[in-house]
Length: 188
Image (cartoon, rainbow, N blue to C red):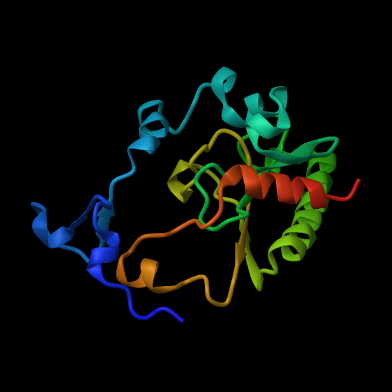
């Protein structure tokens, strides 16, 4: 087993200690992620015609990271996951909140969520899940105008030193590989 990690192992990784920055220091390091600028600059609340959850079903599953399609909803990988295998379940219809969903949409979201849990547990051997919906911008919804449910797989050891000491989350697998593995394991 490898010994403790040393600062030299992270040489070249652009991070800044908060004590080195102006303002009030906090416990967080800053990991610079310029690839997120598109997400930030284009805004988190797109117009309906540009909604990523409306556009995804119009694209190829591999390109849009869709793992499964139902009659009224579908499941896709989160492009900014909390953990490997972080899925979103979305209705096809552009609605903002759960109470606007039809009974058929609610049934499909629930059915897809159950299947997703079984498939992700099988392929990743996770120990549990966080499942939830943030309703509205004030509640933390990144895309508040299109309903989506998060399914985040969790492992007993997924909170290693990196998020605890470095205040940084590492995602160990590529999205395309995870999408393929889940899509392949999804029951017909």
